[in-house]
Image (tube, rainbow, N blue to C red; front, side, top):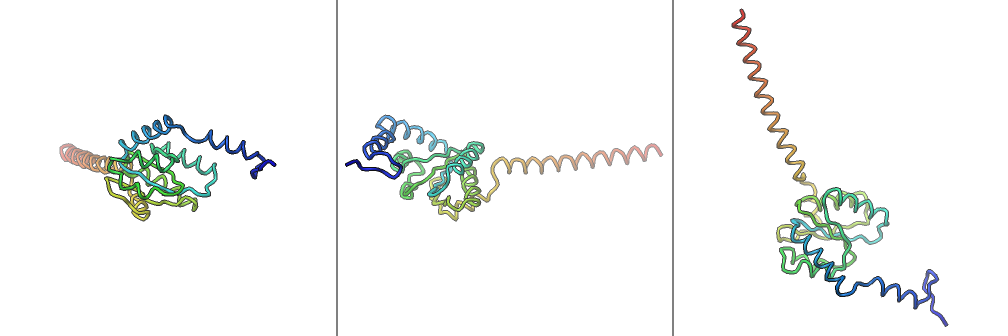
Length: 186
């Protein structure tokens, strides 16, 4: 008798396929090294549960993360725990339970903003926790962080303010010049 799995594959073939999907020791070490390098550069890490999300939606989220400079990855929790060990994000390890996506960014707001914006449109992505500057954040705190303007937005606002002040000063000088020219011409 042959055991059959739901999609018609024989059980032996299914178990062989599952064995092929698992990582060997060198591959696990490579993943931990890659994630550790990202953690070393990160200022923020956001964890979100992705249970039930369609592949097309995750693909859109990955593209959005890539565009924003966010490292976005589905990882085995044990490998992620090893990657954060000995870092300011180590306290986040206890929150690494269940099927999670890991978002990391050097910009303190980018990871939270990308995940939060996607979670607003897709209720199956649930923010679980985050960490920033060595402190663990709840899902509510991550949403507050996401509401803060990004570094680029803040720089643009600063430059606009500086430009407006300079432009107003130049217009005032031009008005004084025009007025003094009108007085000397008269």
